[in-house]
Image (cartoon, rainbow, N blue to C red):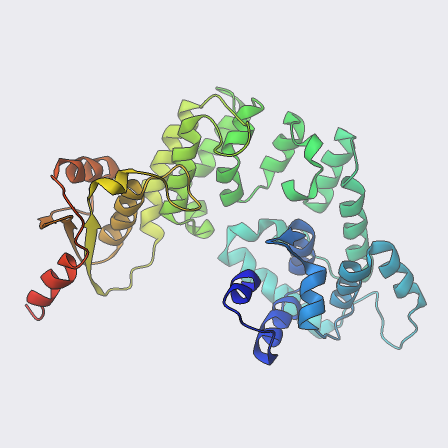
Length: 366
């Protein structure tokens, strides 16, 4: 968000400072502690940079301690805490705030599985927060596998908390997998296969397959079908598009991931609007890849997004176009391979992007 607002030339006015400040101050300490330790640096910005620009203010002692940790480091934050002499009890949050935290916890538990790393560890006192941050700092330089496994289980640490040189350990990944959110699990299938964790008939393979088949988990995770398709196409390649990571494709995992792709369509909420989808079938759509999704060509990506609309919306019409326009009949049961085969059969020429709009205008009100 900050990167894009900067690219648009937007200055840090009052509205932006307030919006960014509230991202920090409106979260409960458990959420914020996980966020600032998991994502310490993104797009060239650290949390320290953002706090300096947004100037957030809060009376919550736990979030104040987190701000001190972000700006000065853990040791300084602990020293400042000891030297602080005020009338507030910094060891326990107020009953009102505890009720708010517990209410948020109930909402998170019922709403979204992707917050499992937050749900599993509630930080309600300064002492608990300090212990969590001390563990996070300690594991950054740890080379003791057993120590890391203990920390993961006790404090529900995630992959981003661990030192890179320890991420080739099968035992560590096995423990991470126990409470790994579904989106993270799908994103890391290649890595887990590369270290032979997902070998055939292994417990890890059975666990992954079971979760990918679980309709309730897919629903709670709210993973968009396109994201599953990207994971599927990447996993099928047996190698990453960046770096040297390679893996042996587990056929059971691959087949289940494909089934999860089609299952996930059921959980996209329809808008109940009328849609005309113009599907570009010109030759250029088969060239290159989609920005941010190097495993997907524009042709595959457009057909997949077309499927999302056709399968979820009650009023969706599809037309294919290049130098001419051809109505096509895709049903809610059409598979991606069927749509790709149909579009490849259409002869193409130069691309005229006006054709779908002209076609729609001619039939307006019909």
